[in-house]
Amino acid sequence: MKKIILILSLALTSCASNPLKSISTNGLTYNSTSIYYNGELCATLSAIEVAYDDGKIVKEATFVLTSSKFNELALPIIKLVQQKKPHMEVEVELKNDNRDDL
Image (cartoon, rainbow, N blue to C red; front, top):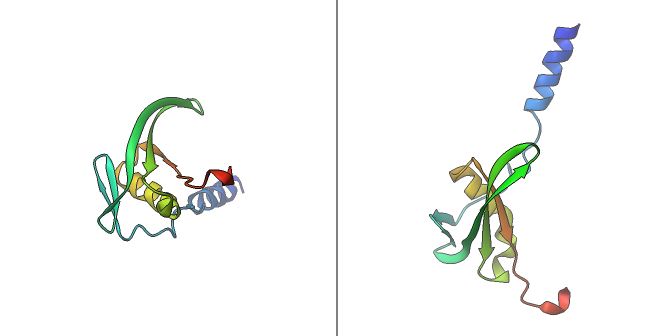
């Protein structure tokens, strides 16, 4: 019985959904410190940080969008960088061109 529970637990854990699975990276390209959308610069690397997170030392890359028109690309950018640099945690800083929304 313990073996069945263990197998089911492993199966459920391995089937955990990836929140980026359905996100498309079409049109995005990654070039060292810059990310382009259909050839237009949409984000630049602003910082690489080292942090202690959940008992581990992690590297984190922060990209800053060049304009709020690219805000909807935050998740695709995270997915693209994660595919290229799987050892890095990735953040995307959104732009807010309208300060009245704060």
